[in-house]
Image 1 (tube, rainbow, N blue to C red):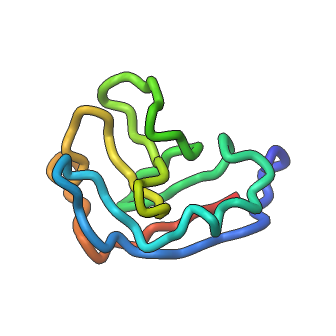
Image 2 (tube, rainbow, N blue to C red):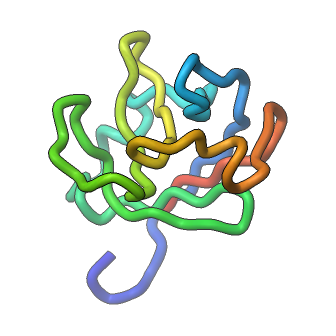
Length: 100
């Protein structure tokens, strides 16, 4: 991805919201395993983008848009300490794109 080219694109959907308002997708994290660098994977949803897939024990500050692998092995997108669905108006059914 360093040269700006996209080698792979995955598309999925937001299928649920968890208790914190994070977006649960139908994209298995294993589908992103072939990315050469997890820190450069781009995640796009609802007109917003974040870069990188983080572990559940990340130390990102409150207000950071992040993607993590949830306990079921799927990508989850949230804003640390904030209900992303309420803040950004993203709901179940929204398209999610993963690029690298």
